Image (cartoon, rainbow, N blue to C red):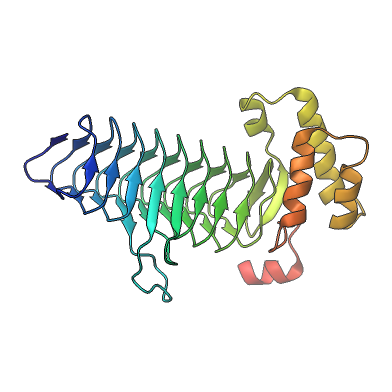
Amino acid sequence: MKAHPTAIVSKRAEIDTTAEIGPYAIIEDGVKIGKNVRIYARAYVCSGTEIGDDTHVHMGAVLGHLPQDLAFEDKETFLKIGRKNVIREYSTVHRGTKEGTSTIIGDENFLMASSHVGHNCIVGSKVIIANGALLAGYVTVEDQVFISGNVAVHQFCNIGKLAIVGGFSGINKDVPPYMAVRGPSVVWSVNLVGLRRSGMDRKVIIEIRKAFKLIYRSDLNTHQAVEKMLENNPCEEVVYLAEFIKRSKRGICKYRFSAEDRGYYG
């Protein structure tokens, strides 16, 4: 381990010899840091945090601190961060709140400056969370999601894989996979740019677009649309979309503003 003389590093932390710890960084007891991890100046890594190989934690970031939950009883909880993540300046990721639970960050994610991941969130892999975006407790974000700047996601919401959320949006419903969302939980279209960039086959994208029209632009209710989607042996991506909708507890994002929404959001 290469640590700056001003860094405060617990002797009870497990740190790989290839890791680098910058000036005034703090590493508490019980932290585990993998190979080639770089902790920049004044970052703070709290007890119960595990950081996977090749992750970079930039200046002022705080990882694994106490959850912002009035019900937290100061029990042992954890933060588990995978490989090749980039966590930029002043981002905060809190550990779990109930005893023995964890906040989990997968691999190859990019958390931009001042973003926040609350307690017990599960973030998949290859996710981008832009500057100032906020995830409340127990949010799940699946693989390859893009969350734009200053987005606020309500607790217990789920965001399906390859979805994109536009900047300054407020999310209080589940975002179905492959969709583009803006404003107060409103689906605008299929995330065509994201699907194409992911290398998804054109035929699969066409099937997803047909499923979108059934859900949001037909006269069918959500249950009927899902049943219709599953007819005629659909591709696995459409099956996954249908299953996501079926297991949603908060309900999925709608397609249009209601008069009530317009009044509330000005």
